[in-house]
Length: 246
Image 1: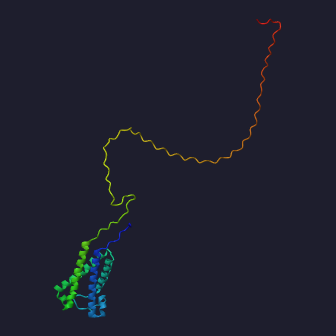
Image 2: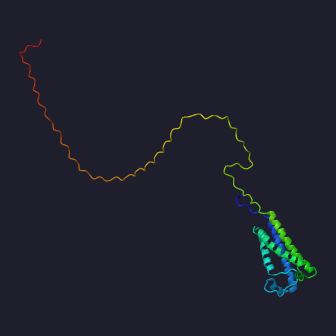
Image 3: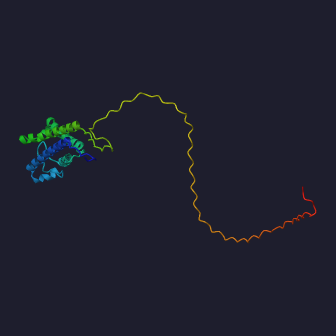
């Protein structure tokens, strides 16, 4: 299982928007083909808005604004089929402007005598007017699709479970029931907090032994002087005439 950005899911509303833009593009090109069939290759200058010398009489024509519309519809269709989110509001804006101009052309044909003079009789006029009705319906359908779908919620991105966690779907062990409540035992009152010991100073670095100057050798001590003691007089011997002791 890989973790990271999830692939973007396919949006069905973008496919519908791209199809509606492509359908309106085909209708515009069909009107251009009709004008070319009536005026020939010289109608290119009229389609680009350079000159209107080769104007084709009818309720609908392909002019410079239709050329810009074809380019915008092609960009919208490519963006929608490529999954670009900006294609949704862009398609609503482009098709909405075209639907408004088409609706005004239909209204002018109903209320204005001058506009009815440019309408030809026969099947060609009916088909050209149907392109105006189709433009209005396509714009309404695009608006409904965009409003109904809205912006889908972002898909959830899988994430890696924490280390040591049990795999998903494993058995769940309920917590053990709590025992009877025991009141706290009173203890000695805690004494004041002892201050933290001060940081010891760094030990001084050992200094290199310095060379000592040689000391002078002391002279040898003199021998002790012998003091003569006074002579003790000798004890005289006893006289020979003395009687012996009793």
